[in-house]
Length: 279
Ligand SMILES: [Fe+2]
Ligand SMILES: [Fe+2]
Image 1 (cartoon, rainbow, N blue to C red):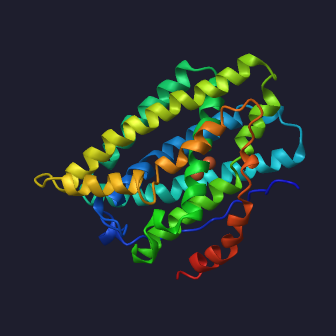
Image 2 (spheres, rainbow, N blue to C red):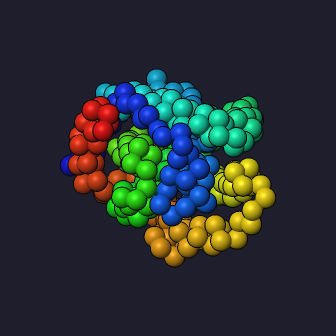
């Protein structure tokens, strides 16, 4: 069976600014966990687009070429909507711009010092991370807090997770097309995941703390962090549940669609019409 072909959707997600610090039903620290990840997307996805675009001319398969165009279109739309989301954080007094500038400078450095193949390796690694988070989020409604969370935020995260699923193999297929089938390529791919995962979670922890502290400078955060710990490691174990899928990447014959969760995409038409209708 052919893998799903992604398509660009131009959607807008007007978010309730009043809920920015507390839109998730599991409380502020879980809300800030998602908010922190949102800060990476506008510049991070631009980096992915550049990394894939560099190799675009070497893709001759018309289906993959089309998928690359849709991938670029989807990531651009995600970047645009997360920029609006991130502005709400800045307006609420959170250090969103400072964190985004810090991330942008690290990405600029990576762009300067790493060869295009390493930039593509980092891209497919981060696409794997987003795809496994998306898969868990789509199959476990509690990850977004269920019906008690603010529905506009839930819709934005579900849309992003669905499209990350839809295009999860595009950058990877470009990698397979342009890289030689050698031990060196395999090691470079594995190193990409180790390196990016380490930085991703380290900076997420630091930035999360800065965001939570800025929201409530004078309060104790102990209770909030205990709730976040429960969310990440106990139920729905939003972080711990990712481990098996993370390790699957190290199989020499790995491909993102070996985990076939295309049935999750059945939700897309309904979600798109709800968003277009401004529900
Ligand atoms: Fe994205
Ligand atoms: Fe993506």
